[in-house]
Length: 154
Image (cartoon, one colour):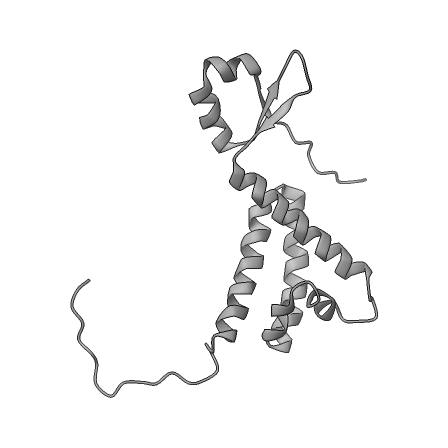
């Protein structure tokens, strides 16, 4: 038995609806991509720029993950992933291994459910951790105050 991803079904509107009810069609396209059917051409997909940018970013990540899985296979996966993501080497060795495992698992789940935002958020969280380490966070013990400092209410 083979498990296949469900086929993507989009809500469809006619191009005449776009011209007659533009406000409603645009509002619907902000919620989910819409297929705009035309009599004189192939259907188009109307979506937000943010969603389109997210889709492109996910494809970039997918390309890097596939390359990491198939190139230089004699290296550990975390070292292969550090080639496109050099900030990975700022993480501890254990976190590098954890990143490699988690990002591939999340990518598979994200792709299968067609939820690219999940992968993008996870990748950004790991990158934020590396940036915090690069900025010096976590390298020294916090300095505790002897006396509390009173501050005015913001």
